Image 1 (cartoon, rainbow, N blue to C red):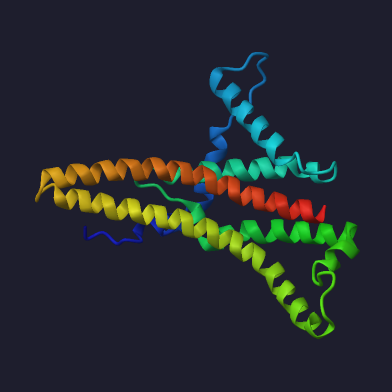
Image 2: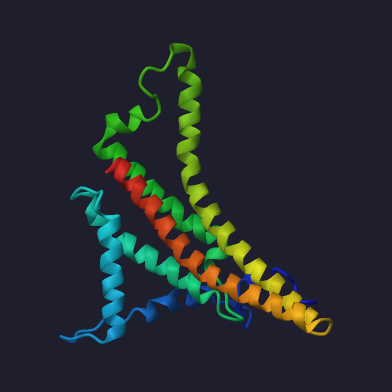
Length: 226
């Protein structure tokens, strides 16, 4: 119970050097490629899930938007795998760092916006001023729409950071309470332990859902601009 509540969010180091790059690269080892004619069950399930997700996510896009398929699938696999690995004991979750999430959200958002201004200039500019706006409200609406446009990557990063961080804090607090209650009342400790298990199962779902939501919002931004 004396452990720092935010100790699990500190960037890990080895011999004084940060090893966050190695942590980020580790999930790529979980998705091996194979040259076999008949894949094993694990690779077959992996490919089926990727195909199902890509089919659902890219169904709204035209041919130009579908060129982002590899980028979107790589994004959802990376975020989902890092979120799940972060649920392991004594592990580090890179997606709890706002700086990292911003480094993913800003380039992707900027790419979709630049793509929209390049190929759909009139439609992109029309988003700043809804049709039928009264003349006195035009300057205010342009400012509001501009702010809402620039707030999109921040909202993407903050949403992912907040959800993953909140889940880890809850698991840490309930786990510590369970250990403390074992010396006081075993019945209460057992009930708390059941709650901890249910919360852990919920966090597994949240880890995958947040990866899907992040990628889906990027896909929707792309759909509006491509």
